[in-house]
Length: 328
Ligand SMILES: [Zn+2]
Image: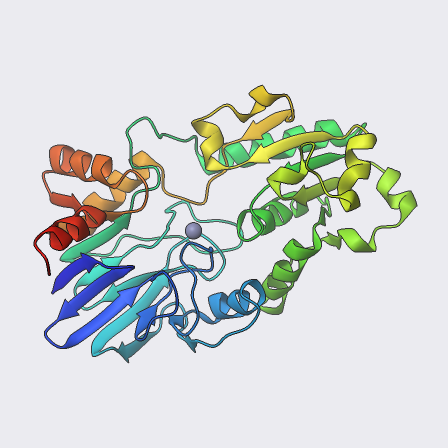
């Protein structure tokens, strides 16, 4: 099987060919999950991803395959496994190759857990692919988020800044564990409604449905990060005027200090990705003969896999460049 990168992750075996997470709608494609940098219409994807796609891209079709299911697709036998990254996220097994997509062996409250699978070829995401990208255990970060929220809510409102799909709904689920019903932006609520339709018990309020009186009470909010600063839209300006506390929630908070600008009171490195140690442990457990890395820091991760695990590894993006250079 030939693996290369051409506006997506391509697998080719004779006349059989598929492309995973392509940039834009592509014939015979597979989409691993509904984050925008992976999402396109018309692909094979989980029913959950398909439902989120319709909201995020304003419609479109796709072919559903559930987690744990298998399907003959593009001439290959394709299986979906839990990726533990977001609601509906899948790792994709194609013959003897495994593509992790974005994944997390620690899983989440609104998704399963990524479990290593033996494979000959492993295509692994490399978001936290540098040795210094080491994050604390998720359970510890979750405890920190909750104790900060509880202490602040005694006297004032709190707002968590998070991306609208995945992290936002995880925060709702997390706050629900201490019986806090957060208020979320309408966009986040539209997506959370899909979780509920698929059986997740999430309790949240829609921002547009809040009364003037309710906005004066100490409440928890989940909104986009850029709503926490001076760029907040009119509908959320009351939060700043009432002097609420603001926190950013992202794995990158474990690497960078976002509180320096003065617009944030706290930050929490809650991630839905494998950190560096998770990546190495996962690769070792899959026992592949060849690894390709994709995403940010692919060369760094490939180098670490080769030197620490003694497994052949290279950046898939690098492979495209080489292919282009020789004129294929
Ligand atoms: Zn993602």
